[in-house]
Image 1 (tube, one colour):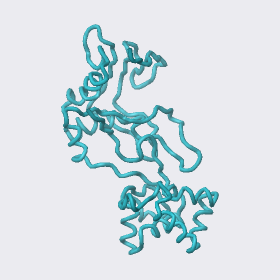
Image 2 (cartoon, rainbow, N blue to C red):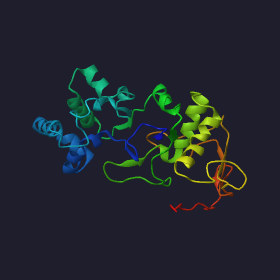
Image 3 (cartoon, rainbow, N blue to C red):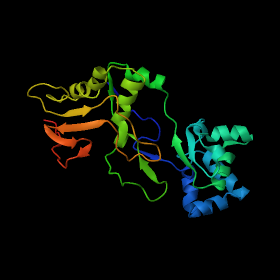
Length: 264
């Protein structure tokens, strides 16, 4: 068996949405985004940064290992609207400049530029979703709507934290029609329950644990964005955990009947 993550943009547990994070070590040396932007006017310092990056000493940006680094993110917010929706690679190509120099230029122009990771295409994900051993999982952490990192690189939770399963059902069942509703449900309930030997879970039958989700498949929608991941999805109307209602008309009841499962 294997997991498939619904939202594949970002960096797993967290995402960093600031272009300046590519130069995190030098941001810390400079002391602020504005000071880094100013320091990037010094050509000799640019060359020093390039040398360190190309030597592989900075794990956060290594073109030797990832030659496609400049294609992995698109710009979401910037002072100049002409950059919105473009990658560093695309901007470099249009300017006929080196990709690292283009990165430096963009940060120098606007050190508050925001980015988002590129996602796998639907046909690519469909290849995995169709496999009988597939289990959809969000592979992230549980946080509240106020959580954020106030220091560089200003991590945000993955979009999967709040909207992973909504994105899964929206894409797989309603939009792409890769799986039927019954198949999609089975791959996030019965399949993982069997894999991890969780008896009386992952199925709806008399005597089993009543873990139940009531949703409107025509309205289930991922409401998150890369820059605003901590929002609740739409269309998840009711949730019961072990027979106790936890969500009623999309509102948490305050009940917390869940528990930790231990290996026997």
